[in-house]
Length: 452
Image (cartoon, rainbow, N blue to C red; front, side, top):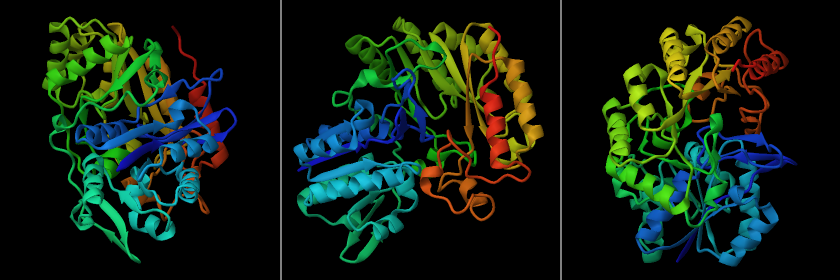
């Protein structure tokens, strides 16, 4: 039995592409000088493909976004591979795009079984199977072992009812099995598949992180409960923090650098510094092995301290992402971000002082947003003067608390899923801030110039 895992093409206009698999914030983005300047690695797909291969299953991973393939040619390539089972990762803003391609795949390869996964599918499994009869399965949440069990079950003509995290159709009845718990032992997974994909096309080179750079995970999950955060609420459904063996993490780091000659590593963990002792252990392992490679990570600013930053810098930390989201305390309280803004300023300033580059992320349009709160954010950004900046619209992705809180109040109606693109427009109505004003204020934030 042949299984094909795909990151489907997603182009919304000439010169504009979508980012889906591997992104906690799926959105569309413009090419820069004809090139993709940001492209995340499709971790879940890659781990799932690797797990199948480790278990002697015939499998292949195609990333059509990374390969820059158009819809027409992608379908031809899928027909050529002729899989028995095709799994596509979807997202909210790409959903209609994905469904259109999958419908064409069904018409072209009528005997292949089609499955989808990802946060949007995980939120609406029964409705999706009801609305789109050409789909056979929905894999819910963290799906690596769900896919492995599904493939084994289909090969052996087993009972689908035994597979946790699976929704499927039995005759005219749609069945959703119990949720699967998150993977407790991350070391049970092999390293993600990288041979099937164009590994040098992936890039998260913020703050000038050297290229080519490679993205890794040392851990999964987050114990915090930010209302807008997609993966902890939808892909994991449990606010559990899980970590890999330190030696295995650095083994993979060395392997990628030595075999593929990557110039930098980005740890794309949900939050790299949740466990201070674990973070220090990784740094010590890097230094003990004398791994001389710049690296970067995403971290919570309120969990950082000066000593930890210095040790991370000694181990090669080149740049760090801090999610701030807003400089208004009431907004942070409502979205359960709850960081100490004074400490955030102190840590950001110290990060810069010791030569580690800083990238800050902010959301415009969270509940309680006003022109005054945006002014506070403008002042905060100018005060700390980061090396780079990301400004997005707050997107109430289905399955999050933010979506539940706003569904009957503020989401613009009528709306379609394609508009849930935090880089283009707001789908949220904020009292006192029209769509036009919100866009103007977002542009103001994006237009801040930093002193160097």
